[in-house]
Image (tube, rainbow, N blue to C red; front, side, top):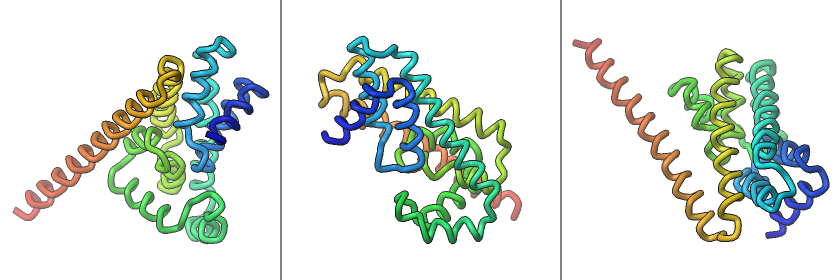
Length: 206
C-alpha cells in the first residue's frame, strides 16, 4: 500500500512525466512493477485528473525508452564485460548473471517473437531487451515487437485501473487470469517449437 501511495504522489507532482519516469524504472528496476504503476495511473485518469490516452502514451514511452537503453547496452557492451558488470552490480537491480545467461539462451532458441510476449511478463521484460541486443536482433524489428507488446500491456493495465479501481479484488483477479493466459501462450509456443525441432531432426536422420 505504501508503494501505491508513493506512485500516486509521483503522478500528482509530475503528471504524465511521472508516469513515464516510473515505467522507465519498472524496466530498469523490477521491484517497481507496472502492475501497480499503470492501474494507479488509470485510477487517476478515472478521477479526471489525467486523460486515459495520455496515461497510456506516457507509460508506453517510458517503458520503450528503457527497453531501447537495455537493448543498446546488450549490443554495445562486450558479452564477457557485461556478465562481469551484472555479477558485480546486478544485485542492486535484482538481476543475476545466471538469469541473464538463461534469458540469452532462451532468446537464441525461441527467436525474436519472445520480445513481443516478454513485454507482458513481469521480470522478463527487464531482461529480454539485453539478450536481444547481444544477439544483434535488428533494431527496427526489436522496436516493432517491443512497441506492440508494450502498448497492449500498458493499455490493458491502464483500462483496468480506470474501470475497476474501486474493486481491487476483481482487478487483481483479472490481472492474474490475463497473466496466466499470456504464460500459457508462451508455453504453447515453446512447446510447438520444441516439437517442430524434434520432428525436423528426425526427418534429417531418415
